[in-house]
Length: 231
Image (cartoon, rainbow, N blue to C red; front, side, top):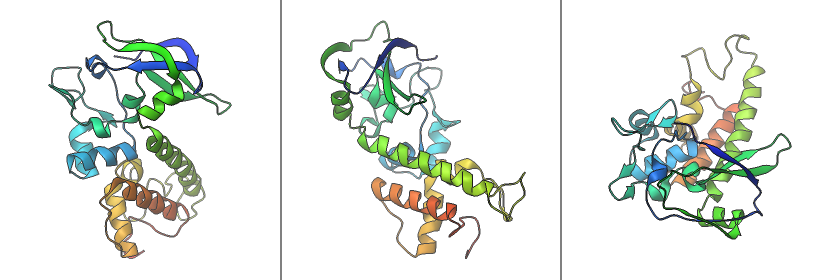
C-alpha cells in the first residue's frame, strides 16, 4: 500500500502540530525503508547483530510485515515494541520530508487512515514537532552517509586496480562484495576495522556510527580494505 501525500508543502517554520493517541493505524500498510544508522539502533535495541537484524526483520531493505497481515513486524498488542529506536520516517509521521532540486528541505503531509485518532492542529511549528520527535541524530547520520556514499562511488570509479566493469566498490580480487556488505550491514565492517586498528568493538550506537563512517571513509581514501586480510 503506497502512502498518499497531500498537496500541502510546508517548511520548518510552517504552522503544524500533531497529537498521537496511539491508535496504531499508521503502523499498517506502510513500506518502511531502513538505513544503516536505523539498522544499528534497532539491532542494538533487540540485542542482536546488524547481520541478524537484516536477515530476520528486513526484506530488500524494508521492514517486513507480520505474517498474513500488512501490520509492521514490530507492532505489538500495546503498540510499537521498538518505539524508543523507531525509524526516522515513523518519527516524522504524519509528515513526509524531501529536498527540492535547489537543496531546500520541505515537508508534505500524509493523508491519515480513515479511523485514525491523531489530532492535527497549528499550535506550533514543523521544527517544534521535529524536536519533540527527536529526529536530530537521524538527520545528521543520514547526511553523513549520503556524503560518504558519494565519495565512495567516486573512489570506486577512479580505482585503477579494477576494470571499468568490475569496480572496487562492488568487487575485489578476493571475493565479490555487495553494496549491502559495505554500508547497509555495519557490524562486519566495524569488526574488521577495529581489528585493523587494534581497538575494541564499540557497544553504543553513537560510537558504532562514528567507527562505521570512519571505516568507510578510510576505504574511500585508499587507506584500508575490509575484504583483504592484513591490508
